[in-house]
Image (cartoon, rainbow, N blue to C red; front, side, top):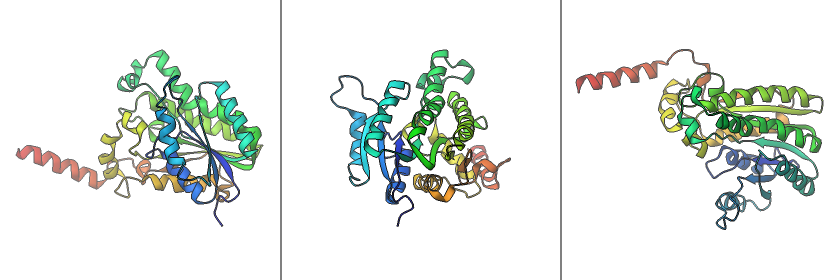
Length: 282
């Protein structure tokens, strides 16, 4: 018996095998869940269908549990309605929905937050935060009692993380969306939570400067290391399963304890001192 036997749901936001959404999908399918997937829309007329091919290559390895794959542009209410119709046709009702989508243009991410373009801000907020509300509202009628909605956030929405810039503002909005959606859907026995994962090497993370964050995060974390994709997947499995039936509106930090620190660890101060000494000798 698996934790997710008999459960059906959606994994939205897989881009490639390094996606957090894919780590989550693997864990829930391993435990018996049937999943529907979305991929970024390919440009019209693009016969290479890169986005579809990347995700289809992954889901094809799970023919018994990965049931369908469709394009999704969360900025389009019509496209969301099409996904609802497909899901109803394939599954009837669902037990979980994973929202793992965020986007801001490279140009805006590289700017100081105060210099974010108006157009870029609206697009980033639409895709990264409002989409959770739109999807939750659209799918609520299909969700069974004790269903679970899960979003992916980051510490940059709670505190200023230099380089995360406008995406940090979007994550702050997403965190608030989680709490208000949890209240609105609680009467329908639908839970809404989020995981705040530490930095991981993903397609989105590379644009936000994750590579530069990893060494400092490892030294700053109480566990003295960075996290792994599978650890986020397992935590998501808990929040999507019946083991977390009394948890809603929560932001679960899966970051090796980084978020609890109010001052640098000894490991970090020692590393800084050693680096300064090395430079002084040079």
